[in-house]
Image 1 (cartoon, one colour):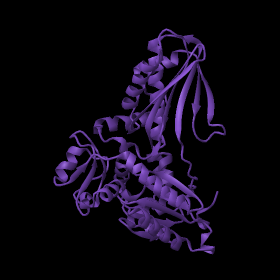
Image 2 (cartoon, helix red, strand yellow):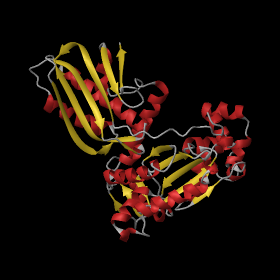
Image 3 (cartoon, helix red, strand yellow):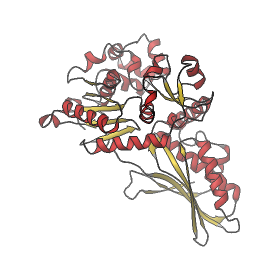
Image 4 (spheres, one colour):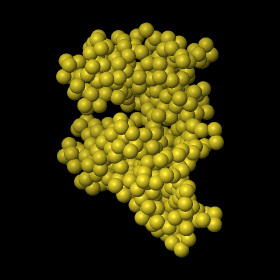
Length: 409
């Protein structure tokens, strides 16, 4: 693993990405407060322009509150597929220009430029790449550069909008020390309040706290925050690979026509896939249900859907497909669900028509699963899945042949 001493990491972030794309389509939106997200009162903000942020509007904020804060804002439902297309163009430009690229989300990238100073000058090269992205796409982009991913990301946020910032080697702590604790990545409302309860309001104060005290209050996360506050970050830039799909299949020990159990399995498979989607910051634009009968006759039906990672939307669609696909006169040997046309993005991006309460529910469920395991919380209708011996095949990225067989009891 490379140490921070000899690393050069850049963090690129498209400025107010969704809004920028909408302004390319409609230049009359320039300079005006724009909010992309749920049109209804129970929707949430997916993105907002800097003009709207002046009024206190922020991403993931309930639409009702955003309307009160900025009543003159222009609301746009949003087109996730269009945003994904623009993201793909930017990704192609950067992937062809950088030795090591990590796509962190639909609008965010990390690049490892270590060693390039001997040939080009890393900061100059990143500056020219930023100008190329803006010139070829019309989108505004900012970047920060330092010895690690955390400091580079903070530098980007300090440079926004449409700026760039270098934190030279050895100047990490002077740069970080005066900044508010809220500017530290991965410090949310709860963690931020815990730190403020300890009297910690700046990153510099966090860096001076005893590690054992932070660990006692925040656990392992406290140690990680202490290291990052002190400019210690060896997190590698992970090469970018575009996962095309993810799926789950179940082959039964005994062929069945138990319709209730089959529906239960479809629900549980889809629920598990949605959890995986959100953990990887992905949304799906297509769902496929597969049925193989006892005579090995196999049928698939796929449907294009609005990009989402929400359980209730994908489960309903999966059940609809299953009902159209299944011939009840024949025994079933295998059933499967596949999510494809995956695009990168944070989980809240897909919440254009979902209430803030539903978004909070998914976040809470995911935290419980992450801490206690995937069986800790699930829909009651899917619990039949664990009452029978079964074989599951999971297809995804990171495996030599893309397939893994897992046996459960």
